[in-house]
Structures are given as C-alpha cells and as structure tokens.
Image (cartoon, rainbow over all chains, first blue to last red; front, side, top):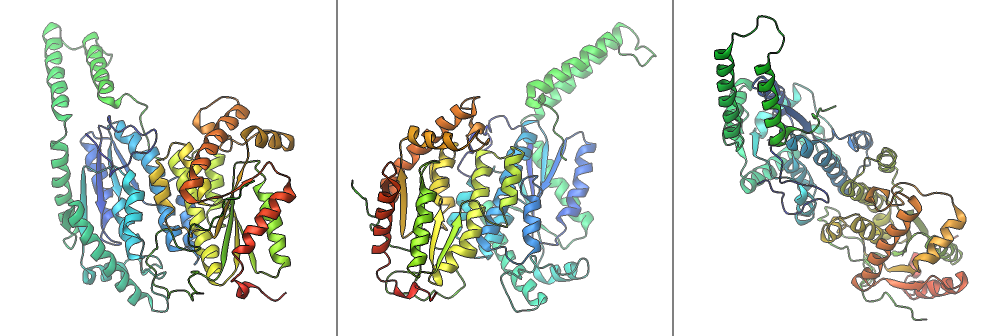
Length: 287
Length: 251
C-alpha cells in the first residue's frame, strides 16, 4: 500500500497507484540525466510505459522559476517555496495520474534534493519536512554519489560553473570555484545524512556510465520483481498462451492479417485485464 | 462596542525563526525590530482596504516612514499565479503554495528588511487570508499554518468583522460577476458564481472567526460608520507607536 510522508493532499487517492515511483538522486553533475536517458528506452523495450519528470518541469511554475533565477533577487525562503509549488504541481498532475495508469515514473531528483538545497540555505528542518510531508514515498531511491574531488573536473570541463549550482547566493564575494566547492561539499553532507535517514540505495557514480547503468538496471529489476502485479501479469501470459494453443488446435491461423475470432477474443481479454488492473484510464503522455 | 486589543503577543517574534547567517538586527528595547507591522484582514467587502488606506494617510501625515504591501503582488511570483488562475490549473495545494511563495518574496524583500530599517509596514491581507482560504479549499489546517512559519508576527492584526449579507450587498453594488477562484468555483459548491461566492465567503468567515482567539486578532465592527472604525484603528495604532519616535522620518 502506497504511503505519503504524513499528510495527504485534498482529493488525492493513493490506494490504486499501481505504477512504480523510481527516484534518481544526486548532486549536480553526477550523471543523473545521462542515466535516465538510458533507463527510459531500456524499460520501454520491456513493455513498461515510462514517465520521466524532474525539477522545474511543471507547466505551472517551471517558467516562473527559470525567470526568477535569471535575476539576482530570488530569496532563500521564496526559492524553497517556488520549488515546492513546482513539485506539488507535478505530483498532482503528472506523477500520481501516471502511477494510477500503471506507469513507471522515473524522476530526476525528488524531494530529497529540494530538502538538501533548503537545509544548506539554512531553512528550518521541521518547516521543510512539513511541506514535503505530502510527497509519496517512492518504491526506490538510487543515490548517485560522487566525492567533491571527482565532481569538480566533471562540472568544470563539461559545462562550467553555474551561479546557482555554485551556491553564489550563499557565499557572496568569493570566486565561483570556492563557492562551488563550499556549496557542493555542504550539499554532499546533507545528501549523505538524508541517505541514511531515507535508506537510499547508494551507487558509486565514479564508475563509467555503463557500469552505473548496469547497477541501476539491477536495482530497478529488483523493484519490478517485487511488483505485486507480477503474478497477475504472468497469469495473463499463461492464459494468452493457452488461448493461442486452443485457437491453433481448432483451425490453422489465417494467412491474411485480418483478426480471427479467437485473436479478437484474446485481445479483448487482455484489454479487460488491463482495465481491471487500473490501466483503463486515458493513456497518459508527458508533454 | 468592545475593542479587543492585540497586546497579547509580542510585536515581532518570527513565528519560527529561520536560521540566519545575517547579524541580529539592532534591537530597540524588547520590541524586536524597530519598525511596526499593521495588517488588515476580513472577507471581501468588509471595507478593510478603505480603512488601511485611511490609516496610511494618517501615519504619513504624522511623519512616519510608511510602506504598503498588498497580497499577491510579488513581481517575481505574481505572473505565475496569474497564469495558473487564467488556465484554471491551480489545485487547493498549488493555490496555497504559490500564494505562500508570493508572500515569502514580499517578506524577504520588503516586509522584514523594512521592519529592521524602522518603517511602519502596512499589509492588506496577511497569513490569515491564506489560513482562511486554503483551509476552506480543503487544505490541512496544521499544514497551512506550518507553511507560513517564516512570517513575521504583526504588531496588530485588525480583523474587520462584517455579516456575510452586508459584505455581499456592498460588493454587488460595485461590480458585475466574480472571478473563478475568487468565487471558489474550483470547489464545485454551485454552478452559479454568485451562489458559489456566497457559500465560499461563508466558509472563509467561519475560519476567520475561529482565528480571532487563536491569533488574538483585533476585532473592529465593520458595520459601524467608516469614521468611527477609523478612529478606533488610529487609537489602537497610536498605542503601539508610543515608543517608536525613531521610526519617524523627516518630511
């Protein structure tokens, strides 16, 4: 049974969320996006519908946050709440509907990143935790971990320093390198603390992308193995096979691509099974 | 008519202080920040904005440095709120959060620094508006109160108490039609915007009344003549400005 971290938003039903919520966490530059871009096609290839989402991608607040970050006057409390707005918009309008439709939701960062960023900026822990008490507990959280020494070359020699990733709003007057080191070190410490508290599955991100991918695949495979629907899905498979066999015995399959009566019944059955499984809602597609 | 005075609470305790790297503000006695924060609350049509405007003019005439901050007016956030309302994409939760974000920006940029600088800050609607509206929309009472823990506690929170029918009568004279969220149309109370507005305002009124003892709101009878209400407001404000000679500015 799916749970939140304490509070349930009005109108949110969580009893029938049959999908899987998989979180990829880690500081800036550890390769989260790269991994998600590998995981999505891998999962789809196996027949899973995937929704990928991530911070600041909400239709409501994404653009507002981007605009606010262009200036130099986004305060710490405001920033924390703007991100919370973005998160809840995606939670209510993307994550929950997708889970209800049986999707695997891959999220690039989750509330843990938002908490770590807020804590580093001195926000009250009780306050932040209360806000995110409405978040769903994920099925798995993979924390891609990289030490600060390994992180620096990755960031510097790929995309360069970013004002916010360097925490320039926190350490005024220093150069970007110093700020980046201070900020990312503080973030790492918060992540490590959160990792203990929320029992993240830690993956050393210093390995090459392929090894990290293999490790993630193994982890996700376990989550899917534990899927309560699995028995049901294999039952359908067994039924499918027996129906096909029965159809095959009765009369040879027609050479034309038209659907035979038996085939039609088979398709109908699987659609009905799909609907019974909570997948009957309008297919969800991410913009 | 009895005036509930708001002296039951300290002027500028922050509800729950945020760890700040900044130096503690210069304190004036035990008053916290040197400025003063007066806010007005009440349902639509209670006449609170008129009263705040009159207080504003009076304070300026007395030589105080006065700053006004309105609900939902942050330059950084209000476009997002407007967009969400126009597209009707706000849920109870995101409605609550985006308004908190707006309020946070105004707290960080104007309310708090100006109170530190010794200004008299006037707010048309404050956290109590969010407490009333968001809870009426179904948000958890405790969650919403916790959300606004960063707010500065007002010196005086004036609550303009008015019966629902009086307030609606005043509004119907002056306008045609209600906006979607204003009328609480998102709550599916009624298909008729006027009826929905009436029901929604009734729910908000109930929340306000419960907050009077909870937060020690200073109740003003908003059915009295404007001049009488204003005299009461000024009298109460004056008692909180007695030791605030240094907040006057040369004009």
